Length: 472
Image (cartoon, rainbow, N blue to C red):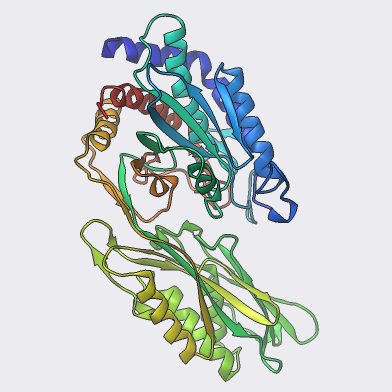
């Protein structure tokens, strides 16, 4: 097909199917597809929520006329057969993080308001997954109608069910299937991300002091996000404590005060965009002497961690030519088993290693009378920015938008890093400002513009056409 014919067909598809696409997104958003391994079972390794969402996504693909396959509940896929078995892959995920507090709109249904969709997963990643699946259906419809030739490669659309909490779905899949020739995931930002920082997390632990002043400290929903809310319960007279910005003080029982901190959610890859509510509480406790000496050492360590998102507070700061600076966030704190457990999430460039991060944080923790244990570690992922596949994605984006956008790398961790030849590819546009009532991924009132999703559909349609021209 000629380019102008494709553009007209895209407009026609959006006119005819947009309401159905929104309904498909809503069908997935209504499922609380949060991992719950305590309820794992055969065929549902991540619990009933991800299982239900996977069933819904596969059923959706079947209704579109695709042949579908369930990979033991870890993952599922739908295929548009090509002339060969070589695959172009697309992978989205239908699991989500907890809704958490602070929502104005219902988290588990799509609310349409002023050109925006709101609900958990509309941007991460149920909305983009639905849009990308419809981009494949666009080409299927044209081929079925004889208006387009069959693709030289098979398109395999994968539905992941464990992206948010470990990506065990992809690990299971890759043990059983060969990688596609190339794969992209609609779970990042536009225009094209050709590399992702290393992923690292760990936990600082400090004992709750029997004679201490801090009885409880809780905050955050996900380790990979700047928390918007946190609170501590301390031994103090609430009426005698001063006011402070972002802090609410209330009585929590006889001789106890509840210190609530309000911040601003942000993804761990862009911590500078948020305000850490744990840090708000930590600063208040330190400023008002609401701690013993042992508790102060832990709080001051936490303050050093939180106050410097480049890691300089713990001696972690570094950068490289592709990824820029290391970032670090303290995403959650909880009181458990007589200990305060503070999470740490770092996105690191090629100029440091996980071992170096572990050594420096461990030394700082020991000095403060705390212990430290490292958790998840994934090395940086980097594609050749001049490769034909990366350039094909960039051309599709620029042709669809009329822009002259450039490639970039990011701090987020997507499925792309787990495949041999892959990229993360939209649909967020960080430079577009949403209304104040529209929240971001992993936060309350998660939202996305309908026009952004329509633009993404156009981009993904053109992308498939361009990838089919490449000789692998």
